[in-house]
Image (cartoon, rainbow, N blue to C red; front, side, top):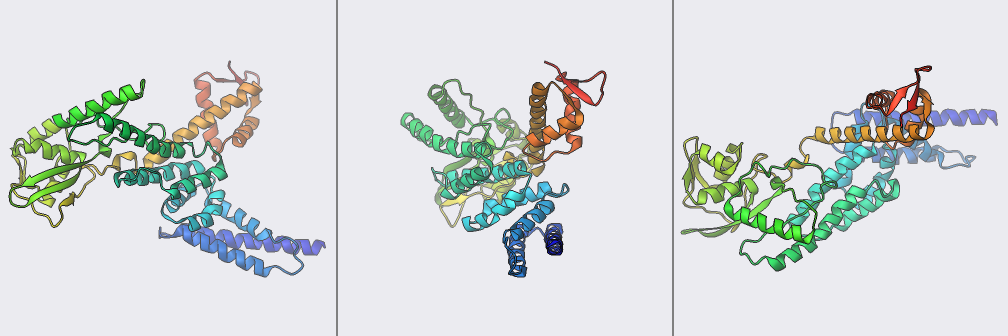
Length: 424
């Protein structure tokens, strides 16, 4: 019996080492394509291999899954790659169908950086929801609902609170649009999208920088007044980088066109329509657009500008297109609509997660010390690691303890420097 137990333990150790090594090889590959799919294929193949290798005397057929889970947890959560793995999983979850997502859930369960996953998945979800709204959808796609429900089953309601909040925003926004339409009899149509600041990826407002044309200012004030009466006590902060505009234009020879533009392109076109030509410096001052050259380049590329240089920017007298509805090419500066959501710079997401982790560690320390009053460093660190939902190193914990000491939440014990006292 002892010999058999030793043989089984040795076999399982070898199986775990095989799974760990192959998973690390996939994750260490320079190619970024289909790493998650490769891990899923590896898991399926090794699970089949391990089950086939079992003897008829084996009573427990769950060891293969347990070995694979342990190996993948070690490979996916190595400190050097854990954040990148969480980002890869979030991207995979955002772009695949439900069957593949269900197959990928064991990888998500192994991932310890679930806060990083949530931040990147929320970033991807924001893009899809906003694009769906622009396409005319007034409901959240069922696929998104299914993924959020699946994540809730794994991690609880608090984990998906922001994701749920984003979906709720879109549902409530349909009511806002409906009520506003009853009071808006202007020929210029405004379809507002009101988002709750705490749910969506943060972005910097350019409301105070841009100088909107009078027709836009009037519409903006009209909706602001309506919303203030509709939801008393709430304050609107306009994020024009997320705006899209449709401008109807008419030319003598080619007829009428509908231009689908960014807010910056629309401001330039409306401003120039009253002047036909203007110096670039005056145009910058009039519109408030600091980096205006990429915007002008995108307009000239489609044929809406005759030419532009430092001396003058001139609208084209004629315009032709094979379609009556023209979507203008965009650059980052001309307003991608989503570029300012933190979707371009992944470092912003990592910084936000790091900041949230610091808050979580601080809160855990204060809760523990408020209850225990006095505690040694080792015991405090052990309690903190138990309380946290994300991985943390001893260095992270030590730095937060020092921060709380400086802010006079804690103090070192005068008789035992390795112990801390809670300051009420």
